[in-house]
Length: 301
Image 1 (tube, rainbow, N blue to C red):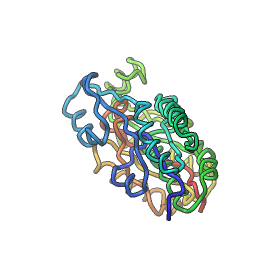
Image 2: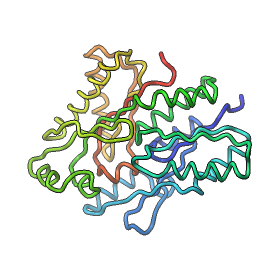
Image 3: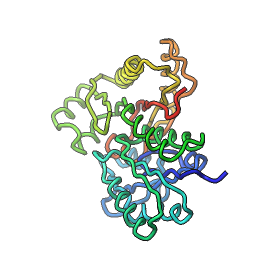
Image 4: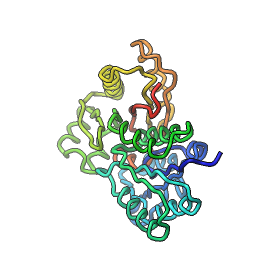
C-alpha cells in the first residue's frame, strides 16, 4: 500500500532512531554544542547517551542547543514533494524555539519550485517526550487509514490535552538558563529543595516544590493522577509516557512504580512508554530530568 502522507518532526520529539524508522517518521535534528563554536547534529554526530555522559563528566560546562535550519527542512520536504506525497510536519512549541519558523520558511521555498506540494506545519505547543507521543499518534492515525485533512484536524484537537509533569536533579541548569532566580537556586541547593514543573499549551508553570528526589517524583505522579481524574475519560484514551535523562534504571523503576500506583487507583494501564529526554530540553534541565508526558490519543478507544 502506498503511503497516504508522510510525517516529519524536529528533533525535540526525542523518538529513538530505531522507533522513528520503524514508524516511517522523518526527524530533522536539533544541534548541540559544548563550546559555543562546534555544533553537532543530535543522534547523527552525537548520541543522547554521549550527550548526557559529557554533562556528567564535565561539571560546570553548560551545553547549548540550536534549532534546525531552513535548509535542513527544505531537504526533508523536497524528498516527499518530489514523490507527490503530502507531508505533516510537527514542531516544538514556538514559545521555546524558532524551529517552526524554519519549517514555515522551508515550506514556502519548496512551494515556489513545486506548487503541487502539500505541506502542513503544526505548532505542537509541546516538546520533548510528549511531542514524541504526539508524533506517534499522528503515525497511528496515518497507518489506520485516516485521511490527511482528518489527521491534521484531529492533531489540532488533541494537542491542548498534552501535559508534562516533571522534576530535575538540581536547580543548577535551570538557574544557568535563566529559568529561575539565583536566590531560589541557592536556597534550593542549601535546603535540598527541587521544583515540580508542569508544561501545558507551550508554557511551563511551577507546580510545587519538594525536598529530595522521592518527594518531587511522587508530586509529579500526584499531578498525573489529578489530571486523569479531571479528564473523566478511560485511561486507555490517553498515551502516557515516562521521560528520563541520563539514568535509565531510575526511569524504569519510576515507570514500574507509576504503573503499580495507577492500577491501585483503578486505572488499568496496559502500557507506559519509556523514552529518553534528548538534548533540546536536557540542556535546560541538566542530566537528571524525570517525569510524565500525557496526551489524548488520536484514535479514541
